[in-house]
Image (cartoon, rainbow, N blue to C red; front, side, top):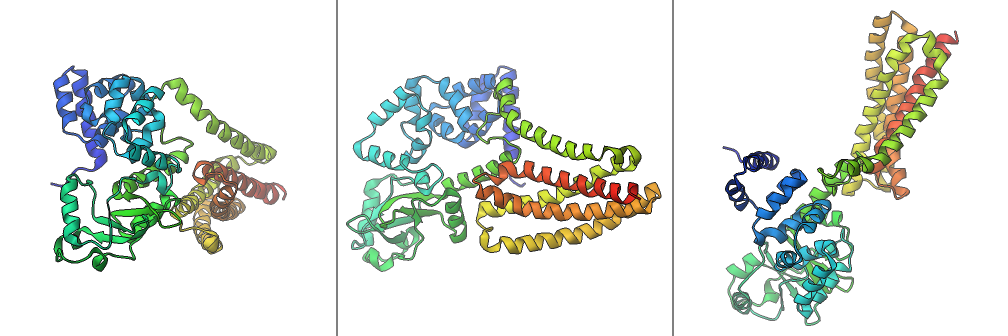
Length: 454
């Protein structure tokens, strides 16, 4: 039997958890939580109303509390921290990796932060300060500064004995990073080579000097692409002088990919992926005012254009019935192109070098679809109203608006990006306004000129 999808497992766990909470069977709640990972518990906490969330948080194994805080979104994390005593918070984050600690340190109360920093040794404090000095969405913000390093002039036997003495190894571990005496990155040694070659070999004889190294200032989404393109599990992070600063593992990259996907989906609706879905009603409503207000303004703009052609609507009732079709077709065509462009920009596949070619291609697609659907819709309109000129007006308007949708779908995100505005956030609103206005001007304008004018 196939393994259930992640979302199916989460929904099933949520049903069982809610049923146990409603029936007051705390032992069932604890049993369920004890069989879940920190990530799965985080998903459940985000899915529960605040009152139930806090009950479940109290029942979560304290050993997992720190990892759960790392997994949940910012707003849910803040609510859990408010409900946790300083002593419990200090215990929760005590065993976190430095890169995970850096992710949540700013969210902790000042007294907890001070105590956590005091508990670290000097080397860990310096490493943590190094991570915090880089933007969160960069390689430096993602990296773990606690990295295993070896020298090129030692034998594999020495490396094996070093690892045995160390005892504990990272959960994700496929490479050892080779550095010189000044800490500069030279290459990497595969764990498989370490285990399968003669222990008398020198590291320098087997290390890979062409392995991919990530610049510390590389954006997080570009880091994800590097991992994808080179099939990486781990990668070293270096500065401009090739000094080894830390390493990034694939589990951190998976988080970046998930966050990028959530960001794209949520921002296209004017929402924030870090919002608590069970936040207070007034707070949630207030957050949505901005984009509802922007949409209202753009809707009034389209209404004003329509108002200018009120005499046409009064004289030809068919235009009032048919013009929503024109606007809808243009909006869908534009959204398809816009989505393609936003995704391409996010993955680095769209740049100034290929925008013109994409524009030509999307205009050609718009022309082809415009001709096809204008004929179909014109024939329907002619049959419906027994009016050939009205059908021709409908055909011309559909063609023009599909071309407008293709044009704006390419140009709107490009222009917004040059204005330092997130295309995923504002692109949909701007595109809808353009296609609505063009659709009204094309259809009602042509109807006014060709049908009433004659």
